[in-house]
Picture (cartoon, rainbow, N blue to C red):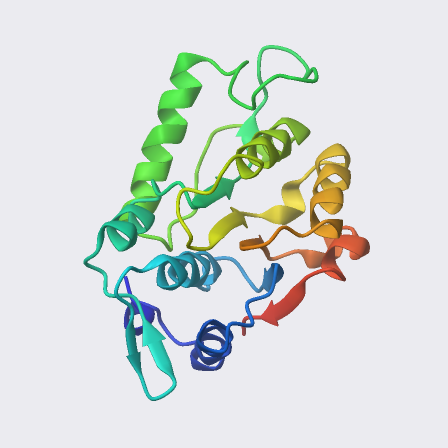
Length: 213
């Protein structure tokens, strides 16, 4: 999927393209708009262009080649420079520090999650439909923070995309706020939400807000 395959949002596409061309990519964005409008697809495309090995550049326009290894793996949601955070079902018991977000999920739950990610890889517009997944918990934030502390896969930009960011519970929000307060070089976080009023305003204020209409 390239910019051309994303329906509408020409102004937003131009804003993101200009930020890449002028090397002024923000450390954090909040994509705001109704469900199904294309926020996820644009966020993934943004990450893909920034990681493309042979981007197409022409008179202020930049796009992914859609052919290189990085483009293909980001489209498939498997590239190490792309991390997705999303709500997970309740595990076998409450979280304890040190637990991975997946530690207490059953093998059946994990298989459902894998299937949903594969479906989203085929169509970036599709929402994840994971039964009983209503909250993004602190364990998911810890997992990503640990991954970000490791060496980068390459010299390209790393992206963390938080799907339905308004589903973070208060512990997750507070942990995430600390991440936003200490931005890391060459890492961009994109919060995606149709209910920004449900997010802490201290989180929103630290992001560049982009409204989808």
